[in-house]
Every structure is written in structure tokens, then in C-alpha cells.
Length: 212
Image 1 (cartoon, helix red, strand yellow):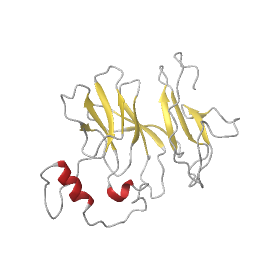
Image 2: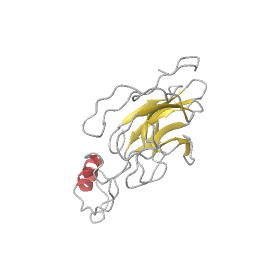
Image 3: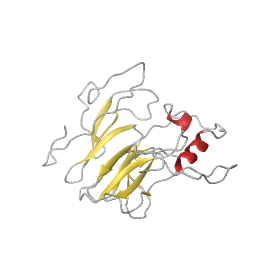
Image 4: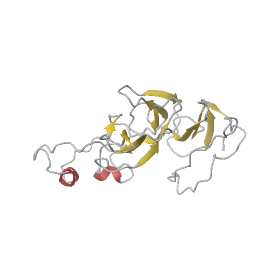
């Protein structure tokens, strides 16, 4: 269990750990101090006065109640160890996945921007260590998957730094492999100029030759 609930998870290949996605601990209330329990901490946090100084304060409505971005956590599958937060800061993480080298990968902005979108695939060591960028090309990344031999497939915008919706293409290790496809990869439903539905992860063949 995480302080603000679990938004996503990935089970490690060896079955011993979970990579979790969720918000950080609720901070102490500046006027009332530490809460007696998690429910009180949540209630105090959501009723606090807020000063809005960032463009992304709404975060698709979730940010109206919770201004802290989701982070990557690690916990043991048997529950013996308390969950441990591996990332921090003001950048929202999403789609935690296990990489072949046993690091935990995720999507997040390469650097925080007011109008930025998640545009990099990162990885972080389950042991203490700084995250490192696996791929960053100033394209909004929607989803990704690792091949058995370690190659990275990612679905991302076909144009860089697009403020509105555009086609999504398939990239293998940073190289676009769907340049001749005059449409987006995958099937999605659009409304107005923004697409909200999430794409499924790419699926690699067992011999790492094909992506579905």
C-alpha cells in the first residue's frame, strides 16, 4: 500500500519485487503539524490553502486535489519490506516497467517545462542511484517495451515538441521504423484535438525480430 494509492505496477521477472507508481508521502500540515493517521493526512492536505504558480496545476483534474506528481516505488512481493520511493521531484512518472538489466524503466519529462509532455524513457536502479535517460528526442512518448535482447521499442509523436496532437510512430532504439505509414500506430479515439486513451505496450516476438 502506498500513501496515495497505487496507480500502476509491474512485477519483476524473478517474482520477488513490484515496481509501483504512486504519489509521495503527504507532507506535514504547516499549521497543524503531523497527522494522526493517513486519512487525516489526506484530509488536511486536500483542505490546505493553495497558491497556484504553475500552468499544470489541474493535471487532468487529479491535480486539483493532489499537487504532487506520481513517483516510482519499489516493494517486495511478499510484503516484508516497506515500499521505498526511487524517484522524486516535480516531474510526473508513468508506466513503470522492468528493463532486462533489472533496472526499473518509466516515462517522464526530460526536464520540467510548463507546457511539456513526457518525452523521455528513464531507468532507475532498485538500489540507491540516480535515474538515467535511456531515450530522449523531444518527442512525447506514449508507451514502450523492451525486447528480450534489450532493444527498446517506443511509440512517440512523429514530430518533435508538438503542442497539440499529431501522428504517433514506432521507434526502435531511437530510429523511426514506420515512416511509410500515413497514420498513427495503434487504434485510438480522438475528441477535439486531444487523445486521452492510453495505448497498450508494444509486444516483441520471442526472437526480438518483430514488434506487434
